[in-house]
Every structure is written in C-alpha cells, then in structure tokens.
Length: 236
Image (cartoon, one colour):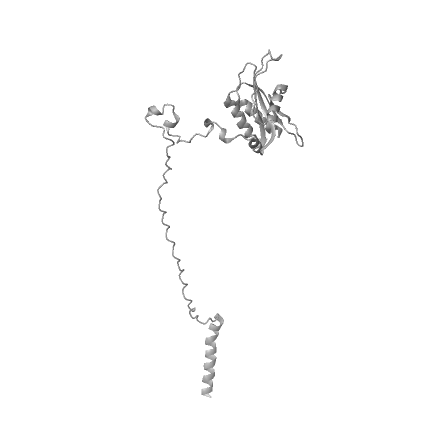
C-alpha cells in the first residue's frame, strides 16, 4: 500500500512545475491522527511547514494555499504551498501538501484544481494498484494506423507533393487465387483375363501285347506238336 501511495505522489509532483517538496498524511489503522506515509523527493524528509500545511487541510477538510513568507517574517524564507484533503469512500483519511521554492509565486488556480482532482482520484488509483490511467495517455502514444507497405504516400514525408491526399489507410486487395485445374483422368483399370482351359485328357492308345522272345520261339514248336498229335489220331 505504501509503495502505491508513493507512486501516486511521485506522479503528481512530476506533473507540477516548480514543486520542491511534497508529503502525504494518512490515518493509521485504528488511529485518529494522520501520519506521514510518503514524501517527495523520496530521499528527503518533509519539513515542519509542509507537514503543518497538510495537517491544516486535514483539520479544515478543504484545499488551502498558504502564501510565501520572506526572511523578514521568519529566519528562512518559505515558498508558497498548496494542500487539500484526501478521502476514501467519502470518509476523510488524510491530506496532501506540495511546496514551491522561496522565489516562486502563488500556484495558479488551475494547478490547485489539478491537485484537487488528483486527490479525488486517489481512491481509484489505490484500487487499480498504481496502474496508469489509460485515458490520460497523450495522443502521440496511441497506436498509429497500419498502411500497405507499398504505399509510398504514407511512408514518405513529402507525400502531399506526390499528388495523393492522406485520406487514411488504403484497402489492400487480397492476392488472387490460382485458377482451378481439373484433375487428370485416371487410366481405366485392366479387365480380368481368364486363363485358358487345359486340353481334355485323352485315353492312352492301346498298346500291343508284349511277348517275350522265348514265347515267340516256343509258339511254332507247340503248333507242330499239336499238329502231329492231331495227325496221329486221325491215322489211328
């Protein structure tokens, strides 16, 4: 929490020209008197006059601009200051005071009004955790429009001299798609070929009876014996 408050005070003092010191007073937990919780510059301790200015705004619950005091009124000249109370959820919780150099004039009304607006946004800053306000960014920080890389009228400083008015980003046509090519026809599938049937089996040709050479030689002899027997029987 204290780091967020310190970041808030650093931010305010960085936007106020001529500021030489600042302090934030806040009520501690279970306390009834505000105490310093942040100072600017960080390495410096707030002076008693700056603390008194913040305490006065806390007690009076309004913004104040104590005038400058020269060396005739006090040993050391004191520059002008401005202070205002700080609230959270409508409840007074502290105050902030900013001091200027001894030779500076009273802060301008718009400077005082700016510190009051910052005090009113103190609660929002705490809830955001110290995140910077997006709406407070300068216009130069916004993203620039994107142009086509080939558009020289957007990228060259003498674009107006080239004869083209800067009317915003040019539409970029998408690349043309390649023409559709019909797919090549597939070759016809070969028809199945039926293998030829084998020739029918023929019965083997009849083979002549095979006789041995001895049988061939014995046949005439048997025939002669048989013939002789027949002849002898007829003669008897």
